[in-house]
Length: 120
View 1: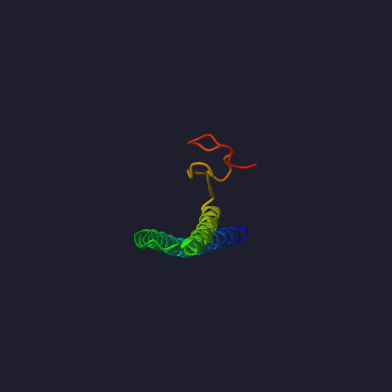
View 2 (view 1 turned 135 degrees about the vertical axis):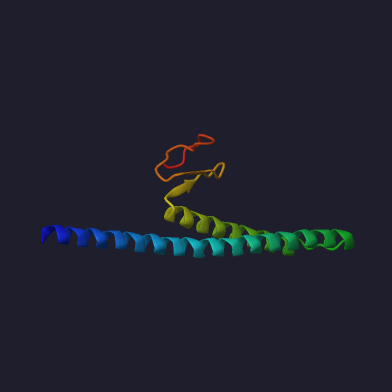
């Protein structure tokens, strides 16, 4: 009877592991979709900023306050994107180098591409 119980325990362990991996995959997919939306928002804001600067120069109008607002918005979106990417990396057991953005194993101390220190 001990062997049968061992098989059941092993099957239960495998099922739990598969369930966690599926859950992680779903969460990573959600995070990637959210990151894609943020990237799209950043691109749209930057495009609008470029149009704003062009139009203001063309007509000679001072829109520096609007430009500052756009810059703040892009900075906020970029920070959110960084946080989403960090969450994705955590699920995938990887880290990105802060210097060159290369993907490294989560236990790496130095970046495999540029050699920068990854973790402190």
